[in-house]
Picture 1 (tube, one colour):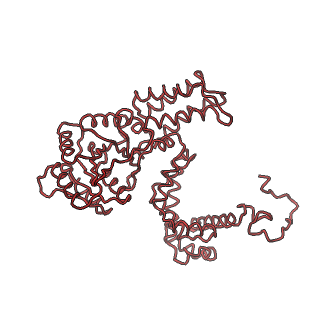
Picture 2 (cartoon, one colour):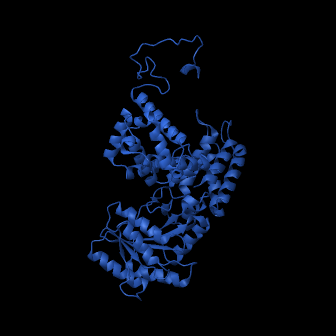
Length: 468
């Protein structure tokens, strides 16, 4: 996400290099590029004008302290303003003191509302809430079945109409009674969408709102519609009264205009973002983290949260010990690859790491293909081979069998094995205090530190660490 915007911000900063301070003369070109970048990203014109004006007023005259160049100072000002237009801080869900908390899901057809309902249900279930999903979209074919399928898959209870001709507001009212009787913490009502905003749709939403008295009315918005997302949010709020938005399909929009426009135009916060097709791919919206992604600074906090969610502490301690002792095997390797898959796509994870936003999509795709290839080879290994990779080094026939079983060539298996052994050796030298590639040189605490140093037979000088 935001790939184009990140690249354009970087270009804007280049013209400020070498300046002593930010002035009106040297900032104009940078601001023109920022303005064009935001407009190309489909940010609302009104938001762009205000943003550029605020950045200019706050940046001009900023002295450049030692060790910080004007470009870095400019980025700091831009970062603060990006955070400001997106709402400054995370806006958590409203919760009723006496359960159940009621959340209405609204939106146009095709925005991903039913899927977002399931994602939000799973998010709250992982927070140890007892959740009830309500299938009140009785118009779209298979909408009720879709929600029930999601519910069955993730062990989320789904409430649907008892009678064939029940109206959506009647279904919602019955669901609320059921929730009160069964100690439900959160009720999430999936309402009907339309291809466009119309009076009947708004009227139905108002009736459901009247009978449920919701704590949240969340508008599900497709980020691919750009600045129209902000106008849509504003229209819904004026006609129905919403409390926030869920921005979906953000992983497919490299521009990011919707994320930058919604709060400023509608006055309502983005509460969650959907960043992938997986049901788990729903994240609370943090303006400061999103600003970091836009400016190519990564998002370490989200990466850590993803890892904490998937990794048990005991498993992490066992893996740490294996890495330190260089005793990890191919079983461990597969576990780590599957962990990464659960956390999201390789590309998505890499771009959360500071400085990694420039990695080419082709390289990421190649990396993902390599991981699939390695997993396929490991699947063709016996239990002994997975646990003791060294047996493969001693017997070429085993490597040939693995190559045939996985559909690759023996040389591919040889490379995977060589890389794995090199990684083990690297970890062993590091855990012993040695420098990788130094061969455990005396004084470095490596594996050869107790052996006497032998002078090379050749008189030709070898390149050492200091010669590189």
